[in-house]
Length: 347
Image (cartoon, rainbow, N blue to C red; front, side):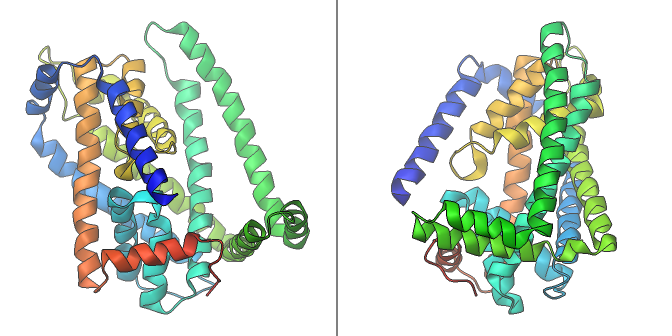
């Protein structure tokens, strides 16, 4: 089953790559990449790593009720987790992150993973909030019909945001009631029932940290700061691309356009794919830039460069931390699979 899932991800990535570049001119893409301003790319790297450090700072607040790991321990676990997402199948990165931090800091891995789930919930809420910015304020060149659809999507996103917040509060305040309903619904599937109930209890426990108003506000603040960092990273790299006619992608798209590209890519990589989100990342990025009116060759070259500029530094840093902390790929894969398995017990 696992091999089937891995090959399905590879096949989908191949399909997405075909859709992204089926009418591309490799020569035009190569020329656009050769015109890239390397100085701007170098300038964007500190922004990327600062953003990842902000993620570590936010995670530290979510772990308040569990312990207080050092920022270095949190940052290294995050880098190993993202490296795993880039190189290993089955999207085990978040489970591996929990395994690495739990083992190094002697913390219960299920509880650590619960804080990661809560973290992702805040990421989802922040992403929905960011979605409102381009949907309400972005002007799509020569596409009034598309602009109208975006306005409709904005109100749907707002409704989804409010619904999600209501559901989160319900789980938090009515945990026992929520667990009873889940137990009843999953009674015909005992293995899934045990797994789902364990994860739901861990998730509810992970919410304990944000029951403190100060911690909740700090997590919200760092979530906004974190995604603002990603917007800046995407926007800075846009300034590295200038057409032969002198049209700069960063000035053409603007910061709202950078938000739009980031949101579309973030939603696109939720689709199944091979490790590293190959293909689906490029397709989502190209479609977003083309909607903004960017040239085809520039859109395609930007998608390739911005993906590689995230993939390579993060992956190399994660590998370095992996061996610095004396882990192996085999060990972290086993730890990640154990966390996913319905038969795994909480520790």
